[in-house]
Length: 364
Image (cartoon, rainbow, N blue to C red; front, side, top):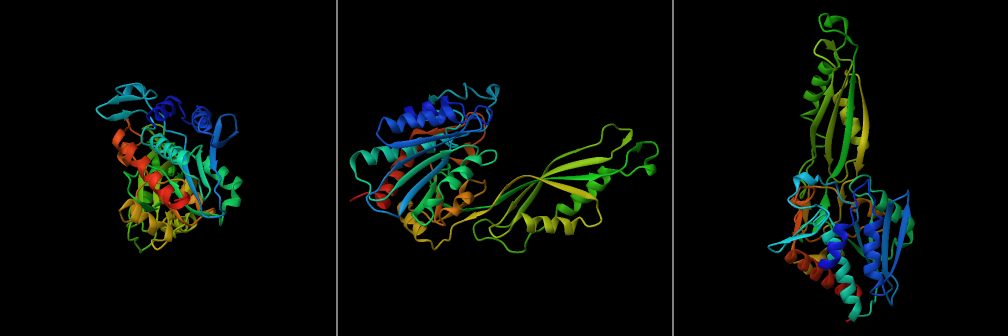
């Protein structure tokens, strides 16, 4: 498992490099263990890999759906090369160690180890996809190609790093660019222009107190908005004719992009503005009474909890309503210099996946 993680980390899979090399690492791992797998490549270097073990019975299969891509790493911010595995005091350092090449290695190792000694009674599908960190192109492609899985799955695992907490809900994401327009003029005669920055100041004041709904969620709390970037004007003596802000909006299950946009339009009435959606991910929730979740509560020995980042889980709803996000590694290690996972965390993840697969998919 550690060797697999080493090879995955060395296979740089940032957006500019693509996922092909990482997919080939997994294909080699599964191929050496006589587990069927398929690489799906498009647009040059965007790549998914899917491995399958056919069960003796139809229906009730298990899907493990992770992602191959990682966020970029600035070498100067790390104590060692980010795409080389470094071991120190039981920790394994490298870009993707936690998010999510460590969880991929743990789940792939679990499948291989249990399949070596037992016969599958249900189908097991493992997929690692492209682009989760940017536009989720890989999971969208997988879900479209695998429509036949709908109604044939017992449940889906998304092996994000949750510190092995059972996660059944997260907020949705709406990244919005808002632009106000004005009319340029010399700074000494501002009355002859329309100041787009002043308009935006009014807009920001109104947006800061926005509530997209009165309700809260028992696990997630309320929706939020954070205005994190602003850009406007060209010089101290020029009335700006354009100003832009970028807002990070987090929505609850049941709230949509359309409902959020309606509330923004209502709140900014009287201000001339335009919007551009830069990224949108639906909120995710699996019913707490779902039988798959109830079984996992017993296997994981914990109650469902939230996370506050997004995942590919919402896109998998078209295949099954029974989805759990659970994996080794700490969420606070993601996307930062010296990202790491411990060997103990990896081992716990592998043993959990083995136990879960044994319960759901293998012969006694």
